[in-house]
Length: 334
Ligand code: ADP
Image (cartoon, rainbow, N blue to C red; front, side):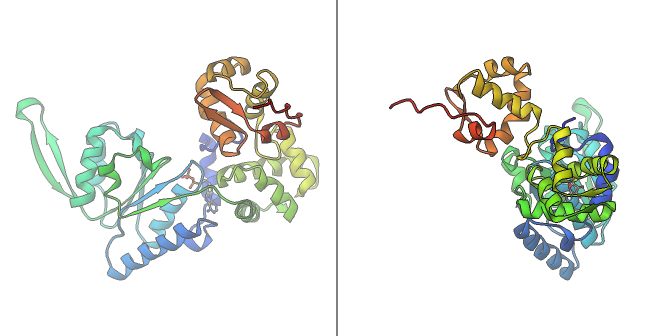
């Protein structure tokens, strides 16, 4: 697992749970989403009903699970957590839906990865609070309609564009979560440091935030690694020097690039003069699978404006030369 990977690691959930904001007012950043969601929830509470279905889209680690738990807390409702890949058959979904309590929040992570039949069952459940349970097989199969209590579905997806329109349209409220600004990540680091009982000064928090790739989960993870370093190599206090020395040990640079990111960029610059070069060639040069380069390293490099994908291949931007401390090649005329 990568230190700067945005996906949750398996042993991370307990720490993450401890660091989760419990109320909307504690949730840092995403001010537009917070304001809109606040209205949706307040209105639902005032009506004494359940809130509209909510779709949260955004990259891993930006706080979708956290927000769904906050929705449940604000509605004083229980929450059930599952994910698209966990629902293989429509029957799996029927079992979950039919056991929901009135007003319960159903959090469905990676909702775009649900099977087709489950998806179709979900349409009806969202709209009419009803499912048809199929009993039997073949020509003798019958559909038994089952009434469901009103519930709120909170769906999460990394890309809302991946959802079939009929599903997307059934959400009353859609929120797109953006990457966090450095100042917001500093607040995340300070808040988590307080909860973990770690001392950090302002510059230490800035240093960690700047390497966190706009993602609170990564900020929290880097903070824990820097804390280890501070406790073993110093007096436990995190300042700029400790943070940057610790993250140098873990090969996370000032901009949040790790070894793989830098290897890709380095090959592109040093072996191919900044490109254009094809993905396969670039992957062979760094000794990684195509998919790893394309899906793990490139998205962040593109987002950072260090690499561009063009029809002729991958090219480095001028900023890439600067970042690796290499002289930019002379502009070829024309
Ligand atoms: P996602 O479901 O989008 O992958 P999570 O909700 O699991 O992300 O968040 C990952 C970690 O980041 C959690 O530990 C959470 O506490 C923290 N986090 C996410 N968003 C925020 C935020 N806005 N303020 C404070 N901490 C946050």
